Structure formats: structure tokens, C-alpha cells
Length: 548
Image (tube, rainbow, N blue to C red; front, top):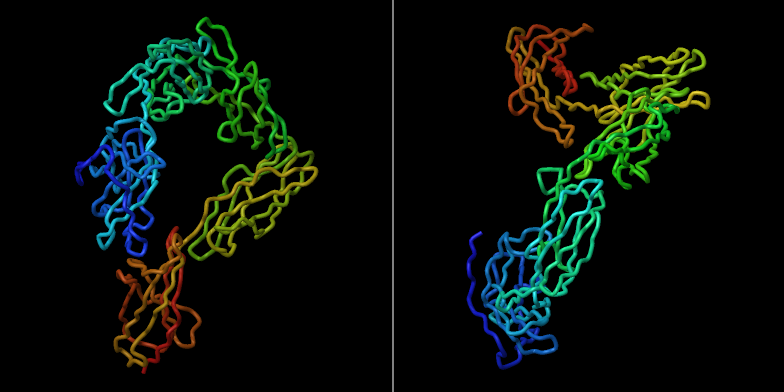
């Protein structure tokens, strides 16, 4: 952003008087709440929330407890992306002072003054405090060494200075406090008389990857002055030579009822450069793949609760970190006596508002042939309640077996999801019951329909006209349905069957029109037959025409 100087004046020293404050009755403040004000080490930032700033804007700095300013600043520039503006969002309405050059270090109260709507002086006192002090900075920083999980010790080397904001001169930060920071630990270090630090440091082995870099193979190490943020320090990336990781399960098979969790134990190890097996560090992140997280304990041991989900193989994983590669070990569930559904149900709704749902019920280790009662349930979008729509019997053989369960021609209850559930008994516990994808179609309607003229002479033209609308499922709004085919039907007086007389296509406004020759007395009707997946069918009212 190009900076534009608003005005230029900065006066140091006493101004020979007390700041005048107008009477409240005379003030017409265009910004009654004043600006948002914050300070950095050598600048003041103001935000009035608008690009239109008040007239004769000034910033005063004074020692707390006094009324005499030590500086008046009217040199204000628009802040840009390089400025230390840390409000919640980037503010294009922020202005800042130029770097301040005050005579003395110390803490200064910040006042803001500008003209009111009638030209009167408006003063907002004590809007912020400027801590004008020596600024600690880390100037050099090195991480020396090639750490791995066996040897995690490196050498930390750095230099720190104190910058004087009065003239930007720098001196060594003698006996200064620094902080070495990673995602796993913070360690305080002390500089020598020359502002230098050089010391061994041992990483924990659980540092997390630096997500700000494209690679996930490194982690960030920050050296900064104590009580200051990372902007006053330096950051270095550390990359580790990863070893080979192995997960050894105490048993590769687990037993339990379908849909339950059971314990699985094992040990996670890695191979060092000498080929010796070592336990992964305590706290190494692991997971039952895509289900739940847990952490390795002492000697790399772990015990995790894992799901029995039919006989489908599952995986235990060590997560990728800067120290370790990803690793997996698979286990096989062996369900005890139980039954459940493991596939997402196939749920469809036809154009004629009929629902069909099907899935496969798996049963395991049944002692004898039996019949399992299965509930078909529906949950409307936005609801937390499952409603049973039908109960069906599903025969199950002795031992392990699978059988398809299907229910068809149910009335469409609206947008929502479906599931089959076997609730289980004491002898045969019930397993999982996954829900379907949401099924929905757009409603359609023919709110306008007319056959004219009425009555009509035999052989004369008869015009059939109407309009087709659709209701969008995503916002519930009705609108014109353009480009749809509408069938025109006729039923002669005294007959019970309808015959198709012709077809019309809706225009951009959802309207259609078709002309016929009048032949017989009878009813006319328009029908939209829906489509394969998106729209329901609908039909118009019947319109009787008397043919003379």
C-alpha cells in the first residue's frame, strides 16, 4: 500500500501550558468513543474505523501524572501490511505515527486531540501507554548438530542486543534472559557479558511439525528474549533423520460382540543407526485408524480400545512426526454372538414419493437358526429423534451369515436419513446401525391451469395453458421450473380412463401452452412426471370443457 503523509509536525519538549479541554456542552465529537489506540516500542497506532479522519488530528505524549506534553505528533501515515498491527483483522483504516525519537526512555501516557464538528477542540486522554524502552532482539541464532531419536542433543548458539529507539544504536544484551521455545518445551537461557549464548540442548523427541512450511519433516525452534514475542527473536527449522518404525501387536485378533470396543495392546519401536530396536518416546501420538487417538507409554507400550465392526480389518497407526515416519499394524476382529449392519444403507425416493431402503444384516456365531427382528428408522433433517417406520423379520442361519434386508414403497416423509437397526437381545447383542446419505427431491406443483374458451364449439381451437413451479430443497423457496416437459391428458365425459393428448415444454417463467381441436366434452389435466433423481411428479386440477 502506498503511504500518504497526512501532516508533518513533531515537537519535543514542553509546550508551555496545560492542554485545554472544551466544555462538554460545547463539544460535538464526531467520534464520541474515540479511536482504538495501541502502541509498539516506538510508534502509536490509531483506528477510527473509517478512512475519513477528523480534522487537525494530534497525538500527545506526556509523563503520567502531569499535564504537560513532552511531544506532539501530527505526522501520521496509513498503516500497511508491514506494520505491527495485531487487531483481530487487517484494518485499512489504521494510521500510525512515524518512529518516535524521544529524549528520554520511560512510560508515557497517550492523548488524542482533534477538531469537533463546530471546530472546537476534542481531547481523549489516557487512550494508551507507550513503553519507550530498550528493545531486546536476537540477532544471530544457530542450531548445530544432526539430532535423531537416540541422540537428541544439539548446540544452541546465539547473540542478543538491546536497541535504543532514540537513535537505533545497539549494545550487547549482557546477562540477558532468553527463551528457547519449541512446540514441546520452553527453556530459559542466559547470555554472557557480550550478549552471547552457547549451550547444549536436548529435544524431547515429541516436537510437532511446523505447519507453516510445505514440508512436514521439520519443526521450528525459536530463540527470543524472555517476555517478548517471536518477532523479537529468530526461528530455525530442524530436520531429523527418521528411523524405521514397527508396531508389534500382542495379538492380531480381537474378540467381542459386534459394535463394541475391546482392548488391544502392543509395543511401538524404532531401529536406531546401529540396527538396535528402541522404544518410541513416551507420548508418541498413535491412533486406532480414523477412530480415536492415544499415546505410547513407557517402553513404547500401549493399550487401546478398538472397535469390533464385523470382520473388517482395522489398523493401529503411529502418526507422522518430524521424528518418526508413519507406521501401521492391522488387526482382525472376530465377533462373538451378535448381529449388525456395516454398510451404508441404500436409500432412494422415486418420483412418485415412494421410498426404498436396503442393506445387509451380518450375524455372527449364532448358536442356532433364528429370526432377527429389524427396525427401519427415519430421522428428519434437523431432528435428533429416530422414528421407526417399519419392523421386518430377517432369517439368520446358525454360525456366521449375511442376508439382505429391503423395504419398498414407503411414503416419503421429507428430507432426512434412514437406517436399519437390529436392537439385539440378551442372547444375541445388536451391533452397528449406520445411517444412509440424506435423500431428498424437489417438490413440484402446477398452481395455474386452464382450458379455454369454455364452452367451445366442436372443431374450434382449444388452448391448454398453465404454469409449473419447483420448490428447492436447499432453501425451501418456490420458483418457476423452466425447460420441463408437461404432458396433457384428456378424459371424455362418462369415461374412467385418461388418454395422453400431447406434450408442452415450460418457458423461462415455468409457463406452457398447447392448442387442440375441440372434439368431445370432458376433463383436461396437466401432469409433470418428475425425473430420474431430482424432481417429484405433480398434476394440475381437472378442468371440464363443454363442447357444443
